Image (cartoon, rainbow, N blue to C red):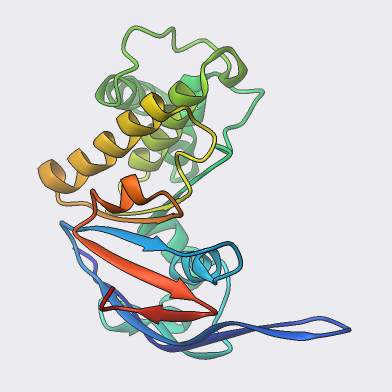
Length: 223
């Protein structure tokens, strides 16, 4: 299973009017079978860090590595496809597709047959507790908690073992949020996933095996 690391990673936003250092010499390691929480105030750099881990942005300095190989060599697009899945606060489901089709989508991208993808998607929806919801429903017909479960099922469909979650409970009520965190925790404990959650919610952080604190682009590993 993959080990994701950052080595002396810095990232600077450059606009016409200003330069902002979002990350400053960040070094950390994320291993299988662990639940990580990255906490910090808005603007602390935690979402930028998650983007680096996902291969959605490239460091200004330093390296993000997967199993000891720089993403610049492995390929960011391949990394996004094979190694990591991202779950967002706003769910990011395809509104015109059914929930079954949303979960099938990653499998269809890698050319798995429609029949195989359909069977697997139904299994995954059941795994995340949606077996009693019609797979023909569109996302807008579901509650926020149910939509986030669909998003998790879609992440699992990619078969990557690293899940990156950006404020996954931010749009949910407290009970739905607790159920989502419990689900992510089980993926770590029962299936050996590496789950990395960006959050400002200390209730989520209390469930983590390791908590990192971001402040002004600097990562505190001893918090």
